[in-house]
Amino acid sequence: MKTNQTLAVFTLTALLFVGSLSAQNLKLVSDVWPPFTNEKGEKAIAIEMVQTALKRMEIPSAVEIKDFETIIGSLKTGEYSGSAALWKTPTREEFISFSKPYLQNQLILVGLRGADVDEKSLKDLGSTKVGIVDGYAYGERVMKGNEIEFVKSESDQRNLEKLVSKEIDYMLVDNILIYYLIKNQVNNIEEFLAIASEPVDTKNLYFGLSKHIENSEEIVQLFNEEIQKMILDGTYHDILGVNWIETDINGDGIKELVYSGQTAGETKPSKTNIYEIFEDGEEVSEQKYFVNGTYYDDWESIPDSLKKSPTVTPLKNLNPGLQLNF
Image (tube, rainbow, N blue to C red; front, side, top):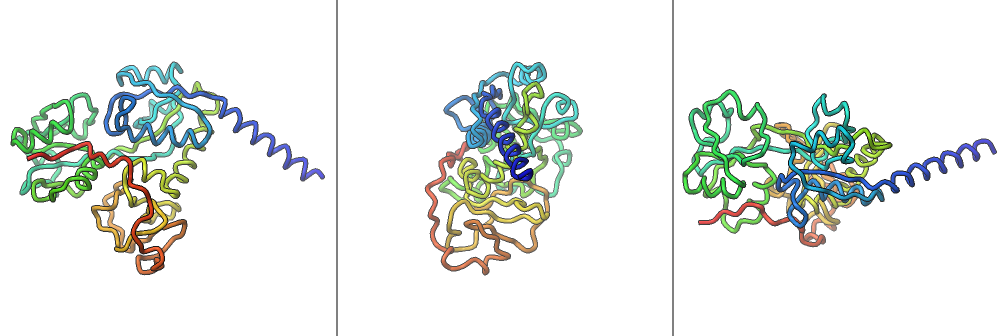
């Protein structure tokens, strides 16, 4: 009887806790940082990822767009509940409860075909012109300690146009935009562009809640669990706009290829069809797969019944964000 009473109390406590979370209406704030955050109606991967997870947790949320200079201060005072896309620092951890990283910014160097974009640090480029987007925080690791002339433009698209017209020698752009460009461009991009195989810098992206919010730590923990579920059921892929992602889903230190649908396709995925969520520079020697809820040690182990044309609906975020025009 005592055991049953204890279980009943635990269950009631859990239900009350979930109910208290559901009663909260989180007031989130972000700046304009495409394709991760943006005004309503525009591509905003991070905002959609966070709001989808919160909705599945039955926690309502709304997002306002503000200048970034005001965002951190508003989280410190509790004026806003949190933000969908933050970088974590020790100072910010004093007043923000951070999730686990759920995405990563991967800054890629791109030049015209024939340009040497690999096996160099930025300082080895010498006195060249590199296109960046005005207002983006690239950080000292990128901006300091080199002879580069950084040329600011209003968008990544404008930098691509400047690169093609040879107004600049290189451009720095997030890897997800290059992925979209390769997937959507009719032409073979590598006939025109040289794209680095490794990023020059990476920064993990976090969901953060002001510690003024009741149960902020518990909410971000539930968010972590929900993101994992979204990866396994394909919701994550759908928002990101990819079919295959490479990530460690079981915590054993080995990355698996995770497919978004119930079937894996007729052929082994090529590198251009895979998006690595967290780039660490390490090559996977033995690729494992996760398809339709099951782990497989290699491609050959996947049953033929799953090696069919994809059954998923077309991915909704395949707007490239960049377009190469000639």
